[in-house]
Image (cartoon, rainbow, N blue to C red; front, side, top):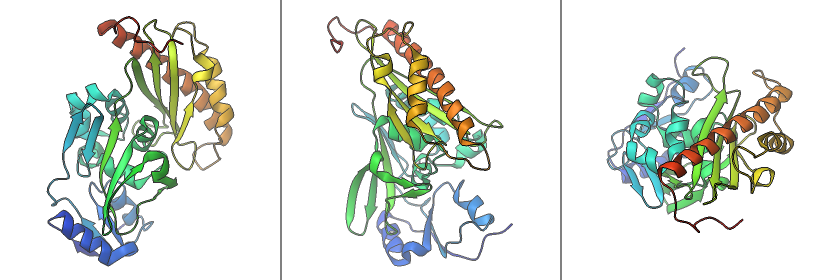
Length: 303
């Protein structure tokens, strides 16, 4: 199928982009990687009157790694971020999640910030941003603002971005010291959207006991769900923690719904199984990191 007719804009600067977005308003859509927008247009599920192509805008393709974490610009491709060793060392969950995004061909063109702005609850990067407590920087006619992930996603494929705003970057904070991470999911076929996915962070103290355990979920709610599961495993070592209890706690707090791909009951089952799997892998990752880079005595939380 072919998309409906539209007017094409190719701004050469951020200022020109914002002026164009202010002019076209809700009648326009931003084109970055196009891996979500173009198929929707071809299937006539989206019919914007204006397409604003930002690929010619300079300064939106930077990856910045500092003590606070990783900041990525709106034109950074999934594949480039996945291959960035410095970004992966600072926030390992990025590479762990990006490896699950569709197929290499899609990752070569699709953008991470674009995926976040698209706000698909079945996508990996919104869940990673939410779990890490990250944020999105938006620029518009009224200036710039930073929106926490907890406020950015407002519904399935809906965000708090205004029609005249562009998501110019996303920030993924570094996990606290002693933290391991993991990302796992189940899909009908390799590269399909997940029926359920779980990203996990597990933090150990200097005595290798769990002080924090959190999980982020995709494909189980209208927006990325984040659960604190610490109560189920706190104070235990990874090999003695009752991870099954954490899985049951997660299932009790999630409210998946039926759709054409899976029943709510099946999604709840997957959430429980994948919670255990992701927490175990994250705990093992934390142990491996502690072995490679042991922290000084007394650096634990004291719990």
